[in-house]
Amino acid sequence: MVCGIVGYVGERSALDVIVDGLKRLEYRGYDSGGVAVVADGALASVKRAGKLANLEKALAEYPLPAATTGLGHTRWATHGAPNDRNAHPHLDALGQVAVIHNGIIENFASLRAELEDSGVTFASDTDTEVVAHLLAAEVAAGTDLADAMRAVCRRLDGAFTLVAVHAATPGRVVAARLNSPLVVGLGDGETFVASDVTAFIAHTREALEMSDGQVVEITAEGATLTDFDGAPVPEKRYHVDWDVAAAEKDGYDYFMLKEIAEQPRAVADTLLGRVNDAGEVKLDEMRLSDEELREVDKIIIIAAGTSYYAGLVAKYAIEHWTRIPCEVELASEFRYRDPIVTQRTLVVVISQSGETMDTLMALRHAREQGARVLAICNTNGATIPRESDAVLYTRAGIEVAVASTKAFLTQIVACYLVALYLAQVRGTKWGDEVVTVLGDLAAMPDAIASVLDEMEPVRELARSMASATSVLFLGRHVGYPVALEGALKLKEIAYMHAEGFAAGELKHGPIALIEDGIPVFVVVPSPRGRSVLHDKIVSNIQEVRARGARTIVIAEEGDETVVPYASHVIRVPVCPTLMQPLVAVVPLQVFACEMASSRGFDVDQPRNLAKSVTVE
Ligand code: F6R
Image 1 (cartoon, protein in one colour):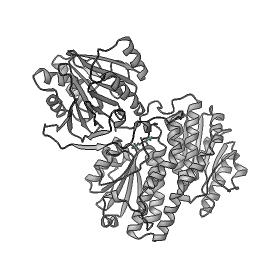
Image 2 (cartoon, protein in one colour):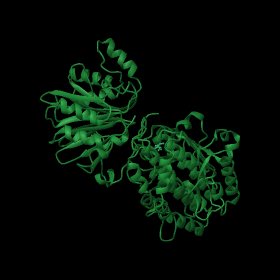
Image 3 (spheres, protein in one colour):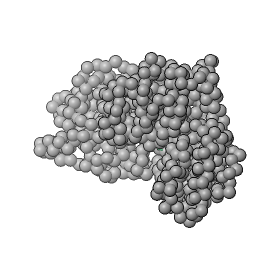
Image 4 (tube, rainbow, N blue to C red):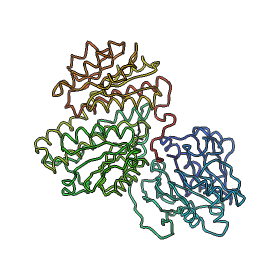
């Protein structure tokens, strides 16, 4: 679950700050919203299913009293349908405590039964509501709200961020986290808690990191942190180095378009400062010694969704450059197959958000088995990098659109840097070879920019196909994960049936799907160096074309062999085979985006999906 969470104490209108914060968190995906404020010794709360506009309408109809303490929530349903009654906040029977929650309380059923036995009536189907009743009972027995939160947290299993206020204690908000994100914002005479800094970046850039198993109490003056037993914990403050403008659309219709356009910059930033004057890769932040890296005898890449596809691309480079066997595994499958992991295994976890629960759990499993874990992540201070032995940040900047784009490219580049570093340390590539590949990488931002300059025909193509019911994607070698990614993009935002295949697999089944007029994208490898592969895919294009497919061929500049069999050719610049995914995926991103918008869908917040998936 990826609910948006905001809590505020200060001098301003809590409601204004909270609603603004919730809007900034909209990109996380949600299906209902709600707020509660503490005023005149009472709680006032409004919540509504649907978009925040519904909540705002309700707030206009039923205005809340002026207040400077409150909390707000956008919910992504897990327990209970996305309706008004299941929306957060949840209050206890006497309306003294209001609670919002992200995550899942795994033992909620037994807690609910216990409360019901003691006479409590529940007003929702959520797991969250048990917390409101438990907190209220503690406070009614004379316990201070922060102590009550600690006591309740000790009884909960699962993953949660909780934020609570009490009618009798204006000026105080209490929050807790376990395996679910929460940060504290420290302003001047005002303090915030939120799922991420986007919610309060307009007010302060000073933040306090919270670790799992901690409770924080905020007042206008600041924050007090303890563990679940009440022992003080040291504060870890940090300064957020991006501003609110970075989280806005910059004139683009959608965040996704803005983020696609940012890819040349993002790739350049991933490379920035990671090559020294001698042309060697330097990864100061690696925190793994050269000795440890020389001992590695196997690499396992673990990730989900688009990040997994970045891992599939990286495998080709890692094995080619380092000669270390590399497996790529879906995070949600990894720990259930009794994987062979030793102290000599390097596990690379890839995650844009750094909070994906499947990936986090796989990471923990790998570490328990003794593996060293390197995180490739886009979010500073997120849980996954914090729990890894080493981290390489992708530096793509905030990715707001649910469909991942710039994260994918920068993850590939970050993996390549790791592969080159390993090759350098282990001597599997000569220094001048590393310099050549780094030169190829350095040329990619311009190559990506040149693809972006030629995207109007791709947009036209998408518009012309808006009524298609199914689109297929074919690729070989590194083009295969690109095909998978092209299909995923189309599924998630244009809600179309789309499948990616290894082109060689066509004859083993999928070719039966080819019928008159079906659009088939084909990612064609360069004819240089990989001529066998190239010839084979040209045959595949012929095969589908002969059966009536509309072939959309992504091919290198100057590759004329594909032209006779292509209904449409999309050109990408000449570049080495392993670099081609960085340019070939761009038209597929643009195609999906235009397809979604011409079919009238919400490009940035597709249905049923959320930006950061913090449940398994
Ligand atoms: C697809 C997409 C998802 C994510 C996946 C992993 O566009 O965004 O498939 O790639 O949920 O997320 P991270 O990388 O945050 O672990």
